[in-house]
Image (cartoon, rainbow, N blue to C red; front, side, top):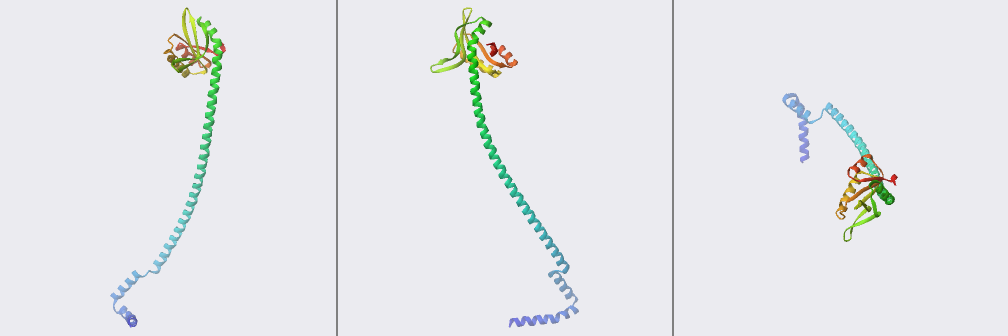
Length: 234
């Protein structure tokens, strides 16, 4: 019943619509306005299609750029992995080199110590003659490598140790041997000699023995009142 009424009303509207459009200009104008706002014109539809097309192109371009960016990210990630592996390998090599260097330094220190011992041994034989020649000093006993006791169970090592007599006065001979004498070696020796002096108060004759020393170091030794002997004098 309701559907038939609706149809009758529609038919009635369609019959009177042309009459209203002819007789009532205001109604006609209002109807066109409503229709133009409600439905898209052909030109507007074409423009809308063009906008949709441009949006589709822009979306496709964005997708392509996103794919390219993804590939770049993957390539960068792979480069980072490669760099990380290289860094790990380099770190391992540095550790190996550090161990090798430590072993080399230990070996070098042992070698330097051995050379120093040999220089000291040679000086024990030569120094009595050199001190007699330069100072007129007579050696009491012999020159040797020894230890000085500071307190019970505590000792100071002395590389070149001996006693001598000059004009009825006894002196304590104290020295060290360095294969290549440096200024810091001189300073260390002075500190060592001053420490020994706290336990042996006799006047010291200080001397250093070396294979070579820079002229500046030689002058520094002389200014400190220390006698300097080279291995070629032995």
